[in-house]
Length: 195
Image 1 (spheres, rainbow, N blue to C red):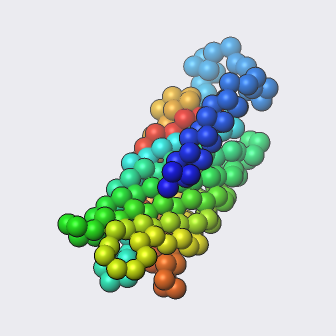
Image 2: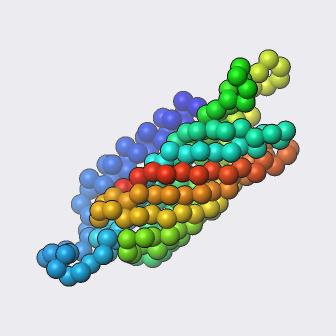
């Protein structure tokens, strides 16, 4: 768990250092309001997106469901002015199976991100593959498992400023702990920064 947090922190620091570099893809306009330009990330030349969400996850544990709450972080690199980008994501969720048993679920993965990049309302979709780590405290048996995981879904970004958007998303999370597929739903609301 500590390794994942350190990797996420390093990735966000690296993204900040990249943003501080000279952006040669940016277009220069005299006055965006005078030209009637809409809020957009691609017209302004911002190829990176970094976001964080509060997330709610209904995690299927096989014999029932667990309500988990946590944080979802994402970094997307848009490829040119296209609608296609590469995304890396880490989601960490926490909750209780019972009053005495806690559950921690982490999904980390990467994959394709497609979306509209112009206008105030920007719908998008993504498909990610990676790993999942489940940890819970119990009296018998192993308390942590690692497995393959997939995440797919989409959402809408509401562009607020040229660099800032609000994000709403819904995802399907599929994991395979104990040779049984768990099918979970994850929802989130958060903020997104373009640079």
